[in-house]
Length: 97
Length: 345
Image (tube, rainbow over the protein chains, first blue to last red):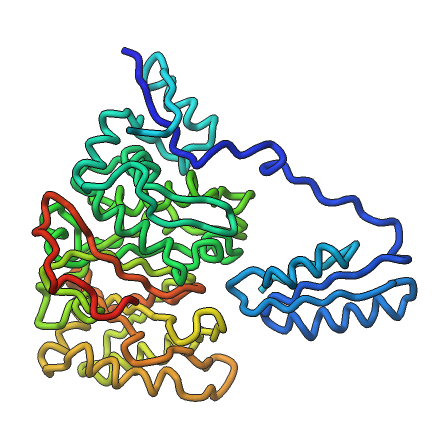
């Protein structure tokens, strides 16, 4: 006996969603604008500040765009998100707890 | 009118294999959600298929009653369970239930579905011995239904928007009832502003489940001091978005309950005893501060059977415990004025 059943999902998830690839890695940081997302976990701000200082000291970083999430549990504010996506060409977006 | 795409399969085996292939299951078999079954579920809850139960803005997902019904059928629910599933989905999708964070987190947080009120007995929610484990259809399938909604509708798929490092067996299903008849404590839902005869669901996001085993204490203070020590070993962090609304849940079994009943301790007295001790400043690495805004944020739930002198601590992930009424069930009395919450945690 045939069965008719309903789709339980909220819509198809495209291959671009499930098979995300890492963004191309730059050969060097020369001229790049470095984005930092401080997510509030652990000592993320202290760590990322120190990382930025080290990378800038190597020379070549054109700018640093630092975004601090208002809380561990929520995404960056829309203005901060726009500042990051428009102002940075490379970014450190994760800090695991 | 149902809106979901429908397809025909030659038989149940073919459907099941395709359900696996499409990623519609948690790894266990699912029941085909036929239009007839889905309509029956919606009718029992008295909800329109298009009724919105909540949304996940960060994922551009809106969850409807039809979505919930399809996944409840697939989870193995009976139609009369569906009003409980609806309440659980609504609670989970409350803004401070923080769905995106609690289902995407590296920590693999689970979601405890705690049922109160008459519906427990009407549909057979286990509250006593073994209630946190397998063997009870209502517990198993209601908890699973919420998880399938999280997976199939809210897109928390491992490796995609579910980024858990290990995940957790409790993510298959985690539902139980409060043993309200164990003693004279005020049930959880009444403490949270609902009438005693109003059935409710409380969804609590659980980052860790810790055993507070204490077989030597013989009085309330001793048991509570053990709970304080175990809770403070891990601590609860503060969070700007969640403010003072975070909860901890203590699921207290009979061997601990009896000391409180014998000594005449209410839940409220327990909360007053616990709160200053939990929130006192830290004294060292394994004595962390517990960020709870008020004594009533400590939720004590009676459940479980006899034997083990143990209380389970359900440490929160980044969310409030949210309580919502079980509404429009044909099993429940019509909600009256007293069924409205005095507050809306």
